[in-house]
Length: 267
Ligand code: SF4
Ligand code: SF4
Ligand code: SF4
Image (cartoon, rainbow, N blue to C red; front, side, top):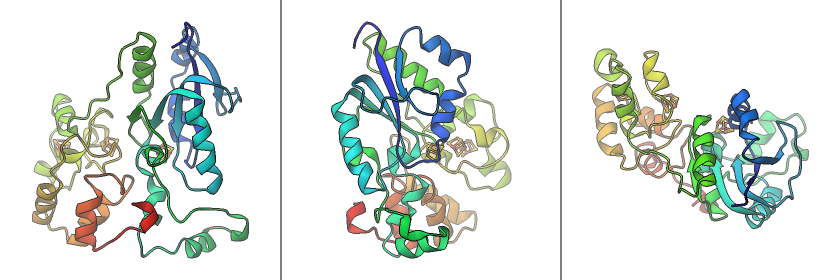
């Protein structure tokens, strides 16, 4: 890393919510510019997409032919690539198109007034399917504190770590009453990684897995628990196949219960 590292924030197919989470750092973002130079971050102002940088943060998934080329350029221009958010780490909500039964042409026609102007791939895939990724920060959106921690670690020559223990641990540390025990509400917390501060259980609702699977998800056991709460196999599959449908740990059991298969180019 250079004395004053250069960073970039690149956008691929996404809703921009993870970039907004960085912008929401407010004054901390201004303080950050004392230790790093922000070379490219279109949503914040600087636009230099071809600049060589020490760390590139990448938001969004690969869903267009142009993005297939652009991500290779980002990799060759960056010492470290860090993917941010569910779109970049697992393909995001838009990866629901990856299932075999989905006709993407039909979806495009039903959404856009002029579908002939839309150039899109059949699938939405995570950045790590296309290039080597050095670190993945999950969430929809991410917790911006993880960006600061990552930059700080890299500046001090320390390998950044993303905690991948179960959300239940974080939930218990917050002192929440478990929604599955007290309200019989399905919650993906036992198989989802921590990092969000157990936001949903803190306001009395079940987690829907936006931070993706934890390090050792026992999805089969949780599916059995959900079944005990009265959910049908298809309902359980829908819970697993949501924001992080393509993530290992959610995908397989969801496929089994929902009787789904992926298009070949999504595998
Ligand atoms: S992960 Fe969620 S918040 Fe972030 S860009 Fe994708 S859809 Fe938006
Ligand atoms: S509410 Fe969800 S995350 Fe919290 S302890 Fe219960 S199952 Fe775990
Ligand atoms: S509790 Fe679950 S769904 Fe809610 S923000 Fe955290 S990881 Fe996402």
